[in-house]
Length: 307
Ligand code: RIB
Ligand code: CA
Image (cartoon, rainbow, N blue to C red; front, side, top):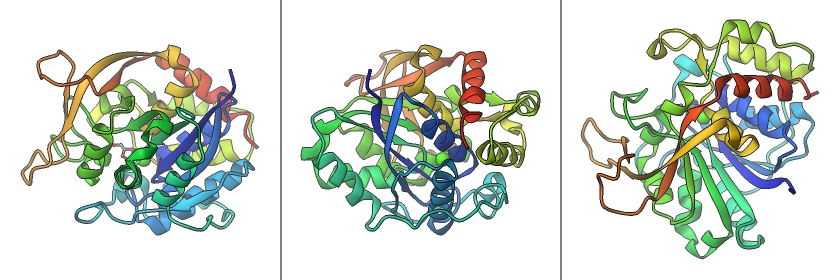
């Protein structure tokens, strides 16, 4: 099969960094563009990190900056997990300059030039850039093969009891994406809780070059998740990429997914119905289980191929 053409929208972000490395190391994927959004840290850091990470791989992929705030309100960064610079304080050599323009336009430009079903969108940060692109030019929706998001949870959140960080940072944008009518695959917190990078796995990473060294340092900067019993560090964003690289490692379930857009404590909650209790279309699928051994074996293998 020819490589799948994808656009990755991200907010690097320690786990975004691993996701970018995995995508750029995988022959199954043709990363056509990387777009940055504010989220884990401000856009000035996420864009710099995206440029630096892509350049470190030696891949010539344009990086475009996008939204520095959600559709409504302002981003609440998460330096406790990602550090002030967004990659755990790891100093990366500066990357190539950003491509001109802004992310939502760049996404639409690529869709406009594409054939039906030619492009897959991957979102691993707040969905602002994707939501703006899809809401502005719905005629381009048929160019999208699939939208894969790391976002949401059907149970407990990680930034509030109800909400996962990406969904919480821009619930309106995520609502636009969930309602767009194209196939949507969700790597939720329940998915990523099964993809825990353990200290022993990290210690076993060998070979590789500057990218692997950077990946090890970035992952080591993140404390094991207290929410997950300190058993390891969830590789949230890499789950979205790994679904496209090795779908056999996952099982899926069709769901109805909607957003709590209210002002109350539930704001940003992804209301995911896995049991057909809610009338309405099964407008998404969740990645319900992960073969963790296969996931981390392949992740180690791909990271070692990078320069
Ligand atoms: O909740 C986890 C998600 O929020 C990941 O994408 C992480 O990078 C942060 O953006
Ligand atoms: Ca992210």
